[in-house]
Image 1 (cartoon, rainbow, N blue to C red):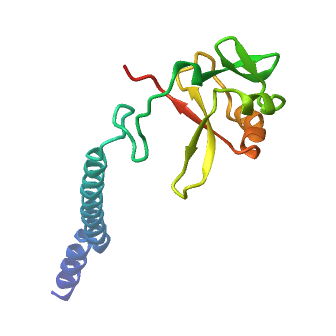
Image 2 (cartoon, one colour):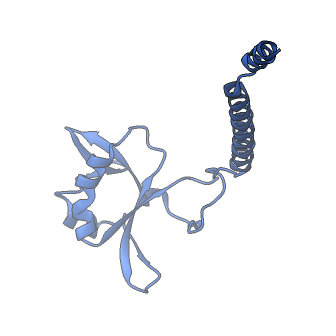
Length: 157
């Protein structure tokens, strides 16, 4: 009988594997973790989708409407590898013609929040030629040193 009991205990022990139970628990734990993670990410994406994007038709905080004459709005044109300001038939090179530009009627005198006065040069924002930022910065460094601010405007009908 002792042999039977030993054999029966050995046979019943071979049928159960403790590693299977551990694997099952870990698998269920991982599935619950992934489900919670997916639900959290879904909620974050839903909140991100509800954030409205800014549009160009809605005016920004500091934008104002101003009545500017047509001859006071210039455009940027590339000539001989340099940017040139054009006001009708008159052209000005920003780096060389600062004195001529200061004496012209194309600049508008304005004041900022601190009360100091600055001359403002208005340029058309819808120009046909693309201008690189590096070209813009090198061309208008001299204007900034002369106290001339540059503002881009759009026509409103």
